[in-house]
Amino acid sequence: MQVPLSTVASFVNKVSPLTINHQGVFPSVTLSFNLAPGVALGDAVEQIDKVRRELNMPFTVQGAFHDRHRQEERHHDDFALDAERSRAMSPLAAIREACLLRFRPIMMTTFAAIGIAIGGLLVSQWLTLDTTPVVYLYLDRLSGWLTRRGGHRKVAVEWGLAVDRL
Image (cartoon, rainbow, N blue to C red; front, top):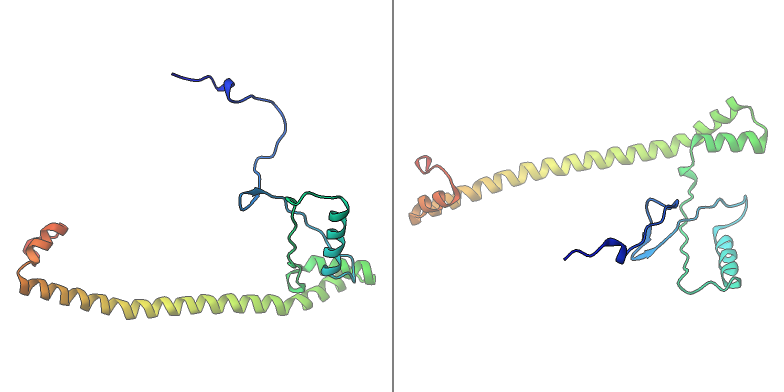
């Protein structure tokens, strides 16, 4: 027996989000903000917590703060715009300074990535060169052991191998 969908659900045409983010099983939202110059993240967190207490937010509303802003993660244009606005630099001078400031972190990241890639290649080569002979010799010994026991043809047939090759 089929139950009409309208008995358990209703339909409404409206604008709604395509996805809902979750933190564990709970719906969540991410708020991003920039700090004013000279303001520490700890001070901003204290102010946000103070406002949350003043609003008597339910205990189910929780906040987590992550210090994701690191100087080396800023982009060239961030540095250049900041230099143009705060120090009245020309665009050429600002982007030149930004490139000089960003060169070291970019190179560190690049060399770290190259190091990881080379390390991964070395490990994979070592595993290949080390494990292939071990597995080969193990299978050779297993084959010899099965041959001595006389059971190699039975195992070969069970595994679907050509018996005439053994």
